[in-house]
Amino acid sequence: MKVLLMGHPNVGKSAVFNRLTGANVIESNYPGTTVDYTKGYMRIKGEDITVVDVPGTFSLEPKDKAEEVAVKMLEEEEEGTVVICVIDSSKIERGLYLALEIMERGYPVMLALNMWDVAEDKNIDIDVEKLRKIFGIPVIPTVAISGEGIGELVKKIKETRPVEVDKIIKKVGGIDGTNRR
Amino acid sequence: MELTVDKRWNLIERISKETVTFGRYRHTLKDAIGELTVKPLMGIPVAIAVLYGFWSVFCSFAGTLCTDGFLVKLFDARWLPWIQANFPGKGSWLYYILVGDPLADNCFEAFGVLTSGLFVPFGVVLPAVFIFYLMLTLLEDIGYMPRLAVLIDTVLHKIGLHGYAIVPTILSLGCNVPAVTATRILETKKQRFIMMTLLAIFIPCGAQLGIMQEVIPDTMGLVLLYLLIGYFIFGFVLNKAIPGRCPEILIDVPSYQMPTRRNVERKVWMRTSGFLKTAVPFVLLGCLVVNVLYLAGVISWLGDVFSPIFISWFGVPKATVGPLIAAFLRKDLAVAQLSAIEMTKYQMITSVVLVSIYFPCVATFVMMLKEGWRELLGSLGVLVAVVFLYGGLLHLIWTLMGVG
Image 1 (cartoon, chains in turn blue, purple):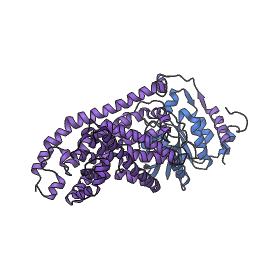
Image 2: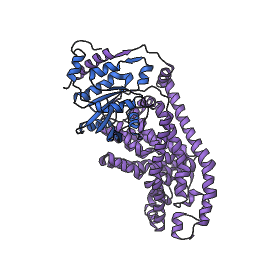
Image 3: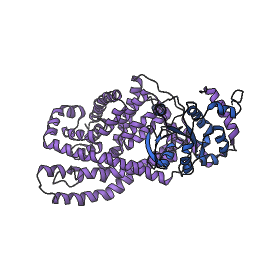
Image 4: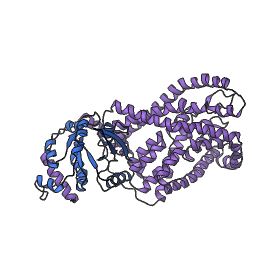
């Protein structure tokens, strides 16, 4: 089994990766530190799982070479690959954009709402339970830098599954209409 | 099913309406500091102060405290006389390769594998690399780098790059190898080519800086200034000469964060040990190769062959050919070797500049090759032109000043 960590630049993918695998990937507080992918391994119940720290990307339409690496990684994956979308909780809407793109392409996904502490500081309240219901996949608040929520993330990896986008649309009552900003 | 961009945003809007409530946002002190350091009026003085602070900590910690205060004494007063006296077979070729000059009174001049070969990486370069990475890591983890990128954006556009090019540039001051990979954050081929070429030619690495600080503390500033000016002149020329786009960027400036101790320790350790792993073997190998070439007479032969170029074009002694060979393996070693050659202050400046801008070290070379051989060949072409024009220009300047 293979797990890809994907998300925008500077949302803490490398921090999650280091927590999951015990490996050492450089983490910095600026976008673009990871420009090549890094592989690591973890063991869940006797099974070896490959974890890949994918360079940050804003969308699946790449604009620089690091993003090209990211999209290529996703597209080249074979069966049994799941994606953990790492999202900056304080900028959740942007993060969901990439997550939806990945879901639309049919990959099994789960969401890590990272930097949960930052969202709390900014008084952003996210109803995790409801998000879970809408997407039908695990949604886990995490603070990778301190390790919070990482155990939960690992536990739920097996519950990762593809999401049918039209079902989400139904659950939120359609997307036609004029509710754009 | 695939959504259109608009529909995707509509869907997100719906989801977020049901699950996210945005509370009142308080403007905190952290935000205020964050904004102040990114607006030019306050930001530029702060940036200058930060960089100056960086520089002075680097010099005083690496140079004054560690190397001069402790390691020079250890190597020159204890290790060197001991190994000179105790290594068997004085006068043999093995002695010459491993210990070097039996009469040398310091580890720069001895130039044996076990004397200079150990002193350069551990006595001089290690403290420099360590303190450089410690401070870089702090700046990174606090979140200062993107602010520097914003502030310097306008200037870097003049050479076809944008603010974010400051990241590979600063990384390169530590080691050119990771900097080459970091050029991937630039969007177009043109930008990556310009950046890679400039950093391979004009940016001295941490090891080189550390050794310069030790060998030519008085004139180091001039060397760096000359390299910096070259960075901009040739960047400007390359930008005009190479076709391609240089797009604007929109970057996310992250808020400041308190660096965590765990991450800082780990990162400094990874980077410093990475340096030791890649640099030490090359330094030792460099000493070995250069000594063998000396013994075999290859260096004096090369010196004779190239002496017209060295003496009349660059105005440096022909003995600098030795260091230039070492420079292909390790530039820090080459600078150390230069210090043992008899020459004037101005010739020394020219030689150090030549060592810096001439060929990238072998590790960087390999990294550049990985990014594409066409780009590498292009960079090398630019490099040859720069070495002759810019190196020769320095000789011209000295001649005009009457010191050449």
